[in-house]
Image: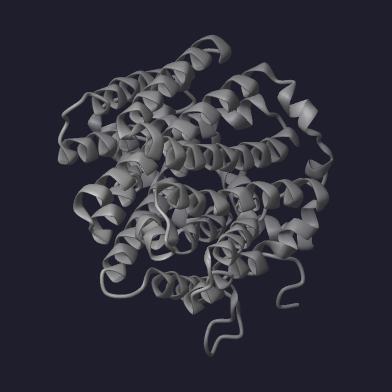
Length: 425
């Protein structure tokens, strides 16, 4: 009965998923190619984000402009997720990934050209991020195909944790290399990662026909978008994990004001990189432990409490602790965010194969819009209040939002989303 309830409410887990080892997943050649491509491009992207954020803040001294620069790397994901992700259902997914990588490589190389004005750099970053949406949707749809059965849950844990590891490397290297070499060499390195990713996809991933139908016309795209929107919002097995995923907008808000926060703590580019790297490092450790040490039922039980805890951990930053304590707090918050492993796996496995890319793109679009908006608002608030106060306030809002997903509705006696066994029994 409880397993059936978890499936209805969006926590669809395999009772054997925790028993599939990493070696079995890495034994799939196509997974290795996609995983390596992801690791390279994510690290390069984070390096570029740090470089541009530091560059804008150094030139303008504006916390809001620095936050907007970082946020612009998220907001285009909303546009791309809405308008472009469906391409990966109507076209061969390997072809979509290759085209996205090659276009992003050219755009990133243009960012590294000397003398490019800041507005043009931000516009190029906007395009790169928008084009990333169909690539990510295509890759997410391929993973369940190449990782049959229980391998998929373990593969999800691997991809999400190593994605955070790549962010740690990119953020830390971005802070150090930007301070040492300047922004443009970092942007050139980002372009190189897209080229390497394209090679891995081309020679490591098999060509497959598209799963979806309905043609390639504009009307087919609009119809697919409408159908995908109805699907994700009307299906509890998709809606519940999607809303839990969107909580990232609030507990990731500190990333948008990392540069002014670093200055308030007495640091510079290296400190900025550390502030960005610590949550990702915590997530890497937490997600590995969450996926390997806990069984499926225990992971489901902890999903909601961890969703509350990752925002609650940020609240003490408002008290103004020093750099060392702040880094520990950010790492703890990132560790608690490991609940996203369960939310991501539940969403993708519940989506119909023919609409998987569109559904994933819509979920990612909402997350991108939320993160971009939260970071922009955090930057605006940091113009008038200390960054530590802004981060603490974001933590409070995150707790309220998480509790809103799990507490009983007023006057009803029912819950919004009981996502762990025994809740409300």
